[in-house]
Image (cartoon, rainbow, N blue to C red; front, side, top):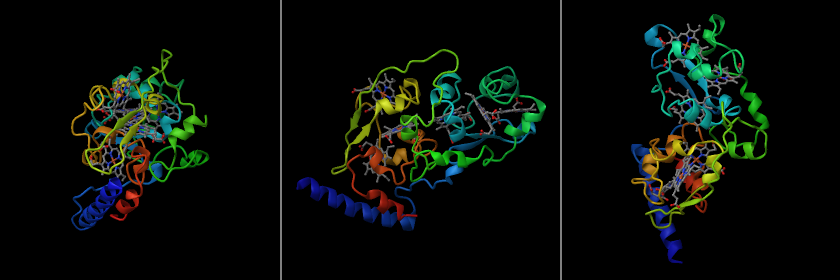
Length: 261
Ligand code: HEC
Ligand code: HEC
Ligand code: HEC
Ligand code: HEC
Ligand code: HEC
Ligand code: HEC
């Protein structure tokens, strides 16, 4: 009973906060989402424009059907932050970075006729998005439930490039209790993440490796692309409308928030 009252008072407070947000657009602004076919697409332009070539198009959804995040963000060492990796033409040509696969064997090569396939400044460039329509759906992000697609064997991204990698068996689910009364604790599944990522993608830079050791882990920061928001909101499913995926017992606050837009 007490819990229920706390929950209701939270909802009331929340409705007010959300309403205020609609006017001032400060409180809990959910990220505005690009359309599904360009969610997770990026234009890399740390050096291109400066060097007189067009920015480079890169599609996460297209690449993640064939390789896990681990391959690129652990083995190949692309940073999970746009325009921070020192990718150069020279490095690519000699088989580093994009060139690890774009070598004419695993994917198109680095020859003259292919410069434009990458350097086209077009964030919508890529294979037909329609090929994803066979995968289980999701309300937003790419419109794809990537967890289910993998579980059902509809995609089979390679988890390593050179040496076979056996993912560490670490499936301890983590319950992250909220400091707010009435907010359903967050369930963080290690096993689901382990199928895509390496431990070092999260530890120790984003999260402490002890339960409750991560300071400032709160929604405000997540919506600002920190903590879970490093991925959730950019490449993995966004917070919008997906509250229950993390707060598994939360009732319907997602809908209330959606009204902000
Ligand atoms: C598989 C994709 C891909 C292909 C093919 C490709 N590039 Fe690039 N290239 C990149 C990426 C990624 C960067 C880094 C972009 C940035 O940070 O702005 C880059 C950077 C560059 C740069 C700027 C950095 C530097 O080293 O001066 C130049 C110039 C360049 N490429 C020229 C070319 C030319 C010419 C071709 C064709 C012969 C080519 N690229 C083919 C992906 C590609
Ligand atoms: C084929 C390689 C590849 C795969 C696979 C891949 N990424 Fe990336 N990712 C990149 C590159 C390249 C960048 C840009 C790095 C840069 O500009 O310094 C990037 C950037 C990012 C960013 C920052 C995006 C932004 O807009 O700031 C995030 C977050 C990210 N990746 C998460 C993931 C996740 C999660 C997965 C798996 C579901 C994944 N990546 C799979 C290559 C890859
Ligand atoms: C782990 C392997 C791998 C890496 C690393 C990789 N790619 Fe690819 N990429 C592929 C494969 C496989 C294809 C599909 C086969 C083909 O088109 O030749 C592809 C296709 C593409 C395409 C065609 C359109 C699409 O999205 O399918 C573009 C553009 C592209 N890659 C850009 C890049 C850029 C830019 C980088 C580096 C920032 C990069 N790729 C790094 C494997 C990779
Ligand atoms: C990717 C996972 C994830 C999603 C999706 C998500 N949250 Fe959270 N949320 C967290 C984490 C982690 C915390 C911090 C730990 C805690 O408070 O339980 C948190 C905390 C909260 C809190 C407590 C106050 C605070 O800021 O810490 C509220 C309220 C909340 N979330 C509401 C929502 C609502 C509403 C949605 C849907 C729009 C949502 N969350 C979606 C992970 C998520
Ligand atoms: C997607 C991000 C992510 C990945 C990948 C990840 N973890 Fe974690 N891990 C977390 C979070 C979040 C917590 C909770 C931190 C907190 O409560 O402050 C955590 C907590 C832990 C803890 C403490 C658990 C406890 O009950 O005290 C250990 C141990 C741990 N992780 C080990 C690993 C190992 C080993 C791997 C690789 C197999 C891994 N993690 C991969 C996000 C991740
Ligand atoms: C380094 C990237 C990264 C970080 C950080 C991260 N996740 Fe994820 N998460 C993923 C990817 C990739 C998936 C697979 C689904 C997708 O891509 O939409 C996933 C899936 C999930 C799922 C499974 C949903 C389902 O359908 O079963 C939950 C729950 C989840 N994340 C919660 C969290 C929470 C809570 C945090 C922060 C404590 C967090 N994640 C941090 C990348 C990340």
